[in-house]
Length: 272
Image (cartoon, rainbow, N blue to C red; front, side, top):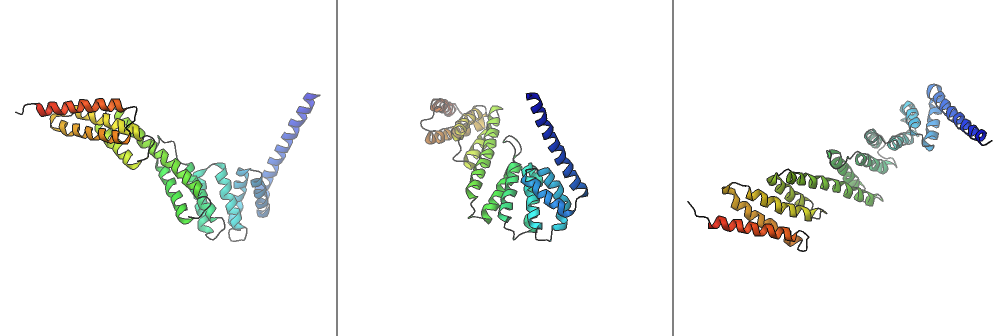
């Protein structure tokens, strides 16, 4: 008896699914513009966004200059957004803004256009052009709607995106250090700290900057060694001033002692 009930339920589900699909195909192929419009709105409420988009693509041109044209295009944009095609969705949101600049949905459209750019932002280790674009779009939204209720959300998203850029720059700086490109590492660490003075990676970057500076100095030709050793002491003082209680204090103190010894040796060496 139990198996019969289960089979019956499956049969009903399949019948409803087939019926729904059959009805959709019928409207798509033979329905009037009005039927397609009405069906598209029903499918949208049912979260069937592919059907919504497909039907609206057929009828939107016919309703563009009618009172319902704005709402249809808004639904079309939102359906594309909810389908997750953010490049295409971003394009349609911008078209919506251009076509209906006085719409009550313009603020929302501008926000969703920015969110499309945010969703296109890749992982931190990849090229961050899309992340920069997302930050630009969010800033545009903030500039246009400074009193928007979405302001906190925008700021939170921007913090997250900037954190991604910060991490990429931090990792790139560490890569120079790991590959023994100490001159590039020093420049990169200093540049990253200057750009992100409150970075969560600041302590480590200043520490590695001291190490990079020292390793660069002792491996330099004689004419550049003294100058670079002095630069190492400067990096040391910067680190100690910022993080006097750091777990790396012993290491940097050791580097300072070695550096001062190297400077003394150079100063005491006979000049030819």
